[in-house]
Length: 515
Image 1 (cartoon, rainbow, N blue to C red):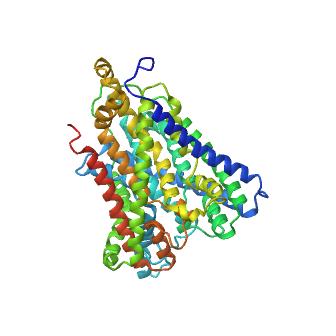
Image 2: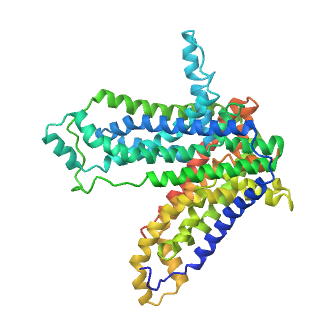
Image 3: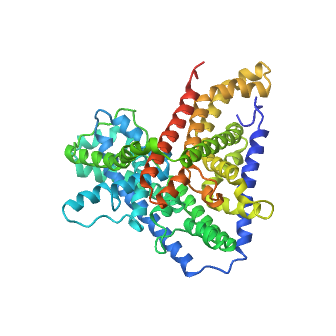
């Protein structure tokens, strides 16, 4: 297909890819040049590096280890609501971080539900701030991801392997040693590397649950260099270090995610003969579901009490978040759709490569570069909202391309010959064929981008002043002022808006898509 004439133009996608590459590489080059003016690392920077590596290692290890029995239980048990539970495992990906953190505080905090129960027995309340709080939050976000990835590995094992093992008289331990353990050895390194890379660039979790001198990540140190010291050289140096770490982690994730599978089976449904212990499997499933759903339930319960008594600032911040999410989603579609079409033709692999550059650079690093570029010519605070929307769009671009490119490739392959035989012009083919056929994928990508932008607490913290705030930033400010009732109401509002905008756009893309 790559060598034939295509009914679509690749130049819009190439132009969009060039803009994305210029933004990311240009800001990274600016950071690198500014980092040369810094006086080097101080002891607090080295402490931030050590804490970043420690919390990412522990978070990846706990998330992956705990996901193994949960995924194994889901793989060998069939029960009512199983599909719903597996679908809910994807919810934390679009869940606003500040909402989850508030829920974790209400359950595991010093004044949370568990501490109240411990107080009845005269025990010491839980201390959630610091390293253990950061790791707890990261496990909350990444346990579902690890479970889904490991569960996929279990489901890829051909059913014939378990049948043969049963015929040979293998018990449950032998099946685990001969079939499941080799699968885990193949899957686990990739899972560990992916979660480690995600935790390296965690900002909102460290900002709310860490923040002390002994619990500061590199991203948080970049933020502090801006807000407290206004030391752009040190912020740039830390950003360069962050870039090196994320790039190395991303390469490791790509390397470890590859590997030989178990071969092809006959597509039979997997049936387990070892049985296992039903009560133990039920324990892991119930424990995981409780751990994931209890913080969300606490946000709903506490937020419902204060939802109708929110201050005007919260609704103003909500309107700002909706505006930023709208702009971010529009920018994403303007970039992602033409880039997906160009990548789908098979001739411009560099287009898709430019799209995934955002995985190698954190939002704060790009924000640092833009701040340095904007400051000599304008007040960065005046451009806080458009800059935040732009960076949010670039950060969502890799996920959007993974959604759009396969569908675009299939659409072009199916309709290319007919379009060429009808002498259909490229614009008509794009608007009447590609866009219409990709409506479900476009709606899903748009909903994902809007939800992620609604819940983002990152770049806006660098650029915003006291007069500008998105809803996540306003909730963080309310938490800092110990207005927990108002913060809970704002968190419930943010949760409803994020899930609502995702549902509306995803559903809108699928509406009459078969036409």
